[in-house]
Amino acid sequence: MIVVDTERLLSAWLRDQPEIVAIVDDRVYTDNPNRATFPFLKLTQIAGGPVFSRPLYLDEALIQLDAYGGPKVLARQLIDTTRSLLAERFAGDHPGVGVVTGVNFGDLTYLPDDGYAPPKPRFIAMTSIYTHP
Image (cartoon, rainbow, N blue to C red; front, top):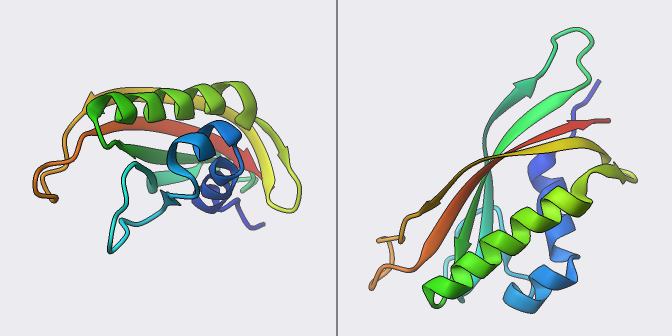
């Protein structure tokens, strides 16, 4: 059985949420863009695995959300909006892709990204997303 590509599902779903579009337009990425326009949201699956090996059905993906702002307050608005939408709307059937059975949240950290000059405001949030086909 093939497990759900949670990173792909989540990025497409977030691009369809009017609250996210109002902040970042379609700038929801799974890699840093070559020429970044701020604000933007980046998500990366950093770990994960099956909850049980047999049957290989329920999967847990650990996703890191990086919310970049213009100002810090916009980065915070973006991460808060994203987490709120995940908590309220993401669980359920996503036809043709899979089913989200639950979302758990981990740490929230403010860590400006010094890969940009000057460093860009960024909030990082961890989330575990449980899916099955």
